[in-house]
Image 1 (cartoon, rainbow over the protein chains, first blue to last red):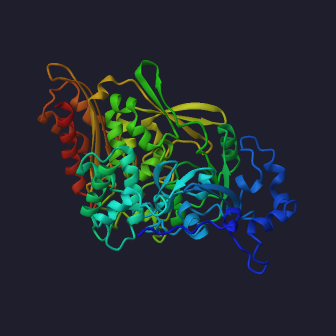
Image 2: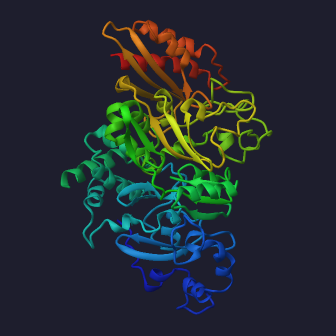
Image 3: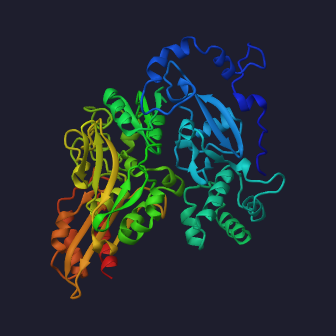
Length: 223
Length: 328
C-alpha cells in the first residue's frame, strides 16, 4: 500500500533537471557548473563573497537567489540518502519532494497547512511540508512515507493501518501515518481523547477516524 | 507566488542591516503564515531573510523567577517546557490550543506575535475591499460575512481580529517583547506591541520596520501558577477562536481576590487585556457574582455586527467559566 520509492538514479543524486536538447547525460547543475565564471556568477559575486553574516558557501546561488539568478543549491538527506539539486526559492519542501525528486508518496491536499496530507518528519519532528520552503531545510534529515518501511517489511504503523482498515480512499494516509509515527515518539498517545487531539492536524474526508484511532492503538501496543 | 530573493542569515546584526536597506524585505521564521500569505498573493516581499539559524531558540530562567523565551523557540517546545508548564500554565495551554502539532513544530514565538488576521476579506486578494491589505479600499467585513470579527476596539476601517492564542496568554502575563534594531535593543510592554486598527489598520504593531524580535520575557508572577486558558471555537480542535480567555488569579485564604489578570482573544484587533474586569475583580470575593460583574464591566462597550453579536454573551460566559475554574 505504500508508494515504493524510486531509487535515486545517479542523475538525481547529482542534479535533477535534464536539459532536453543538450544530450542525456547533461544535467542542469552540470550545465551551470560549466558556466561558472560567466554571467550568472559575475552578476552577484562582488557583493556576495563579502557579506558578513552569510554562511560560507561554495556557490553564490546557495544563499542568494534572485529572480535573475533563479535557483539555489540545496542538500537534503531524505530517507537516509543524500540529494543535491538546485531549486527556485519559491519551491516548497512538498513540491521539491513530489515534482523534483518524484517521491509522490507525500500528498498535496489543501497546500495551505490545513489538512496534514503533506506531513513529513524533519529531523524527527512532524511538519507540514507545504508551508515551508525547500531552501529552509538545507542539510536537514527528512523522513517521508517512502522511508518508513524496512525493505519489504512494513513499519508497524503501516501494518496497523492495513490491519485496522485505517483508510478508505487512501489520499490522506501517508500524512496520517507519518503524523502517527511522530505521535508515538512524542508520547501523546495515552488515551483515545489524547490521540484524537494530537492527530487533529490530519483531516480524513472519508471519515476513517475510528479505524485510524484503532490502528494507532494497535501500533502503540507493538512498539 | 511572486519571485523573491532568498537570503539566509547567520548573524542578527547582518539581518537587521539588510532589512534596514531593503524595506520590501521580510524576515522568514517558521513560515506557517507568511508562506501561506505569499501563496495567496496577500504578501509579496521582494526579499526573504531566513532567520531560522540565528541563536534565538533558547528558553532560559531570568533572575527572580521570570523566564526568557527566545523568539525562534518553536510553539511546541515552549508549550512542553517545564519552566512554562510549572510557572505559567496558561501559556502552555494557550499554545496547545492553537493550530496542530505539525504547525506548532514549525511556528515560532516571534512569528506568532506577527501573525496576520484570518479575516477572509484580508486573506484573499479576490476581495477588493480591505483597508489592511490595501489602505483606502474599504472594509468588506463591515457589511459582509462578519461572524468571526471584532466586538471590542474596532474601527469603521477594520473589524478584523488577531488570531493568536499564545498572545492572549502573554497579554495576561504582562510579557515584555525584546526587539533589536540598528540602534540597539529595547523592550516593549506586551500591551504596547500590537495596535488597534483606528484609521491605519495596515499598521498592526509598534515594531519598527528595521527591528527584529529576539525574545519575549515573562515577568515574575507567582500567582500565575493558578491560571487557565479557555478557547471557544466551531470545532473541538484545530480551529481559530471565536472567543478565548486567559486568566490568572491571586486569591487569599479568605477567598478575597488580591490581584487578577484577564485577557481575551478572538474579540479585537489585538490581544485584549481586560483591565475593566481586573479592576472589578480586585478586592472582591471570588464567587460567581463577582465574576459575572467583571464580565459585564468588560463587555459593556462591546459592539456586535450582523453575524457576530453572539460573541458578546459568549465572551461574558467564557470569562465567568475561566475565573470559576481558576478560583476552584
